[in-house]
Image (tube, rainbow, N blue to C red; front, side, top):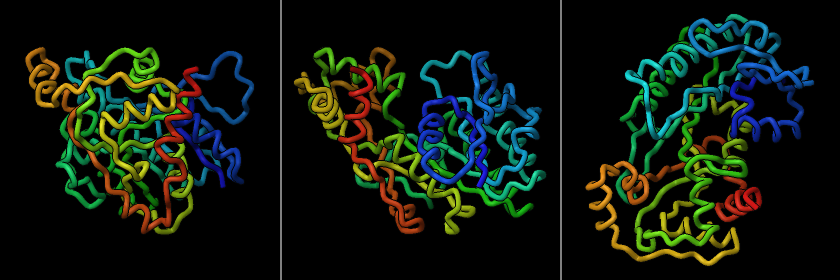
Length: 313
């Protein structure tokens, strides 16, 4: 089976391509621009992704598209109208690719969305499920939800098999941004005031996400379904930092500052959203995914953090 993977040079894309090399599938990687020293014959340049991108060359002979490329959520948004910017890539760009995929005979379209389609937080012990009414709160989440709706409508019109996967925070070897910064702070032994956070959050190791995507390539029960994904083990911020320290082989330096004090202090300095991510709950129920696909996360949280730690050293 021939696969087209978009976002192939990204964190998740690189892991997916590495894993698929151990299968019988043939892969074509779509990138914005091919580097001058690239010798790969299975890489296609498509330029910027929007409503006008020409995917025809990349789609030749393709059976399944795995669409990872997106304008991603950022902590500090500088665009005056971020929703318009997100829509150009995540909605218009996605649906343009899907429509061209239909015309070239692609059978299945796997879309990696976001748990932000469900919402920003949960109540403790009341995780998001695949059957919840979506409630995206920010421009990124709204754009992903609109893309999902457009794809499912296209599936009804054309018979294209659509699979939607909503991951929470993804981590793994090579992860950057806040997760990598957190690991380095723990590694350096810098004291952190997060020794008494009693929350629960779902994460997903990149290898577990990749495992699910590969399962969805040809599983008959995946057609026109939404799947949530996680490591299958929720963890508090305090527990996560302690587990990071174990993986790094260092002693955790966590001060037991009361959670309420952190939340109030963060609100006073305009960092309420940051406190919500550190202290709030975001749990994901993957029972629907397990039951329909017979899938289990193959990598534990401890094993995933060990992989990150090895990459840092």
